[in-house]
Length: 215
Ligand code: PRP
Ligand code: URA
Image (cartoon, rainbow, N blue to C red; front, side, top):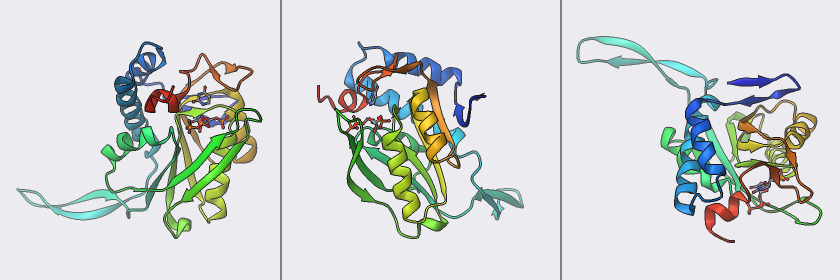
């Protein structure tokens, strides 16, 4: 894991397996089915890092040989929050590691002219105060969508939030550092810049369209 000195909120999870899979994800020739599988696999590998700080507690266990004390994750309070649509592509991968996690949904799309996020759905479990939230979206571009989703969670009482993406632009990381300095951002890659339409360069194109075959 690499930390970027100019972005104290950012952790780049640059494990060789993730870099390898990301190279195929970026390629324009990668077909839809493989693209979805890669998103799930990278999300699963990143979830391993993202959950490193989860609290554990002692439990009594009887092995085939004797009684012992082991550790398990405390409570079942983790909530995955994919940002629709593209964030949905990461859910199965993370759930394969943590099948007991709950799943909320935040519906946002970018107005293609203003690049401002427009909210159309927000549903998360009650009692947000006591839960750990993992917000999922493959792309952090201007940061408008991620910032709005995190603000919505905070308005509902959430205090423990992490943001997990595959590709981040410096503009988006900077925006989250300004709006939500308390929220760690985990990314598989920090890319160079945004183009004039708000696409990440070099990026991987439109993640939602590539996942769902809508272009
Ligand atoms: C994409 C992406 C993020 C957002 C990132 O979604 O999945 O949610 O753009 O851009 P931002 O950081 O500038 O806000 P999009 O609006 O294309 O919607 P979709 O997932 O429904 O395709
Ligand atoms: N959303 C995407 O899907 N891709 C980008 O490059 C930027 C925003």
